[in-house]
Image 1 (cartoon, one colour):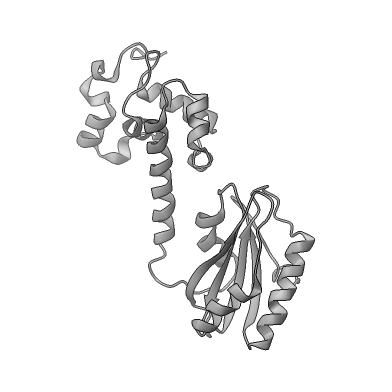
Image 2: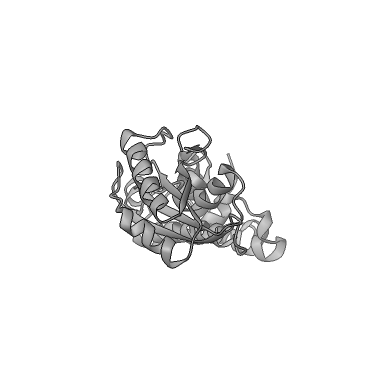
Length: 232
């Protein structure tokens, strides 16, 4: 057991306090728990901010992606000393990290394989608790022109309007499109509804001389490609 367990962070040696450690040794020297402790600022009457952070991370299998799935209500309900302010700080910081990863694609990516689509869309769709349907618009060289969120639904489905898909494709002079949505359940296999909407969109796009080249179902660490599985 650490000699610091019953001390507040202010009573720790200077070199062991997360903020001071960051300044003196650099941000890479801090553990995930220490970074989280800086975010929440203080612990409770029973434990320091670092100990509280370690407990939160342990419950998430020390996985920041798992922590990113926690809601404000989850954090407040489970952890003594975590109120609105601390929970909001954690959720906001992880959302910034997610958006930073998305913005990392500063050059328009070129799609060569289904894994390229997964790499692009996983930060957007991989760990959200509800279903969203997106499209990627591509030019003739399979470079992504832009991406659009078409609809957002509940945990088991979302409503897709073919007209909402074809309009941005036509407006942006896209040569082809890729359909993307997530399964919050963690099951990558397509449902009958997934297969039906894929065919409906493909048939409608063909009329406009736009090719639907794939439909990707995204979960946290994996995906299903209609094209790879011969379903296109």
